[in-house]
Image (cartoon, rainbow, N blue to C red; front, side, top):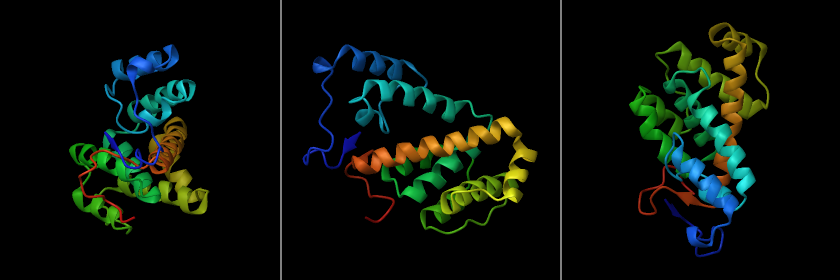
Length: 190
């Protein structure tokens, strides 16, 4: 993963040989977990090993164990990436979302800042829930009731956690100017 802004000192290169024992422990935990890599915010978070440890565990739960099908989790992540205009978040999750079955026209609409034309009611519900939360800082009773009726209380709570976690990820990626590939075109204009 390349980082824009490294020259400006926003994210010093990570040197395993100079890492603290706490940094090495969290690095090993991340690399041996379901992710297996440091893509995303982890190169920034490793400067604070306790944050990195706690955030990566929350992230593993939010990404893999929310009770939502992968397509819906990835849709929520792309909505978050679009809301925050998080370049690396989009670069990482766009191909995963498509592979999970999200229609490319839905992703394109998100990228363009428009409401997609949804063929799937679950996709529309995830989009409505996420955009209401991001735009109004609340979710209407109607949308909340639909989410609970469709997914249950536990998964609805997990959806809120997923959105909050990926907002944190997006903020981290944006502050440190992180990119997946420094030569790839950016999904969002800067």
